Length: 67
Image (cartoon, rainbow, N blue to C red; front, side, top):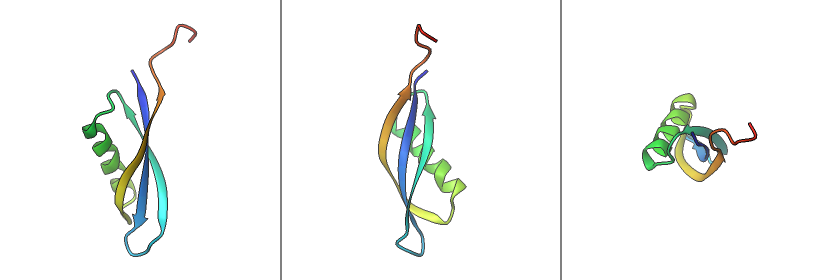
C-alpha cells in the first residue's frame, strides 16, 4: 500500500507566524485523503489556521522484492 506525506503550511491565528507540519496518507492520494490530513493537523494544532497543502510526496509503496 502506498504511503504519502503531505507538507502543510499553517499560519498562527493571531500573528503572521508560519509553521510547516506534515501528515501521512496511507492508501490512495485523493483530495478526500488530503482533506483528512488537513483536518488531523487542525485538530492537533488548534492555535493554527489558514492551513494549506503545499506538497504531496510518495514515500514508499508496498514491499519491494528486496524487502
